[in-house]
Length: 112
Image (cartoon, rainbow, N blue to C red; front, side):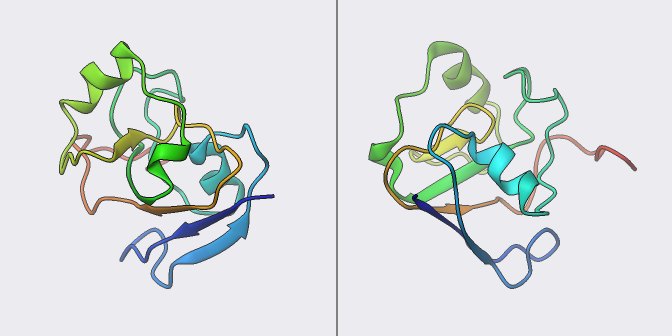
């Protein structure tokens, strides 16, 4: 089972995290299952950019993003070449290192 390593994020995961992830699960679902409350304003339907992550290791092991995801990523804060929407990126067989950006374009958080 691959591991997901989450780099420290001041609000969501101050100490970082490391856990095993089921292959085929989205990065977003894996984070949420491990109490890392990443924003997902569109309920994981690929309609916003609030779940944007930067894949620091293992990016090439992910299936390529589709055109809709690419179009949305163009609007993400802090976009990098290895950015993905975590609701669309499915964990494969390799370990991943992800960074949750400090900001999102969404100024409202779910549940607040």
